[in-house]
Amino acid sequence: MADFQVVVGDPDEGITHAFEVDGQDANRFIGRSIGETVDGNAVDLTGYELEITGGSDTAGRPMREDVSGTGTAAILLEGGVGFDPTVDGERKRVTVRGAEISDETRQINARIVSRGDESVEDLLGGDEDE
Image (cartoon, rainbow, N blue to C red; front, side):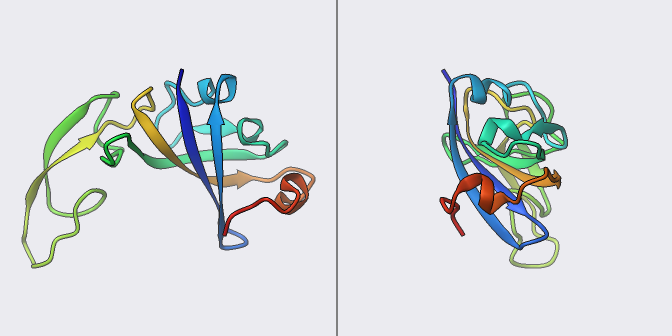
């Protein structure tokens, strides 16, 4: 059974909220890819819609939107997710995870794209992380 940490960014407020998700709520994320939307009920945000923006696996490898599937791939990077070059023109081969969420995924990054009737603070009851 999969369990994830879902980190939800609130672009309007400029803060993030972390949620531990398992069981049926975690199954709502399995098979989804970066860029897809998920119902906020999975993380107790009723009426909200979340867009998956990235994540990482159990070994800390980042998910990349340009790598299809759930497996790992060693790709040559010039920058972006997974590699920050220190000199101009530097390239490096880095192992990254595909864009699809699987049982190997540990953290999922998401952002709020549509809001419900209640505020996030009201729904969470003051349990949010900043």
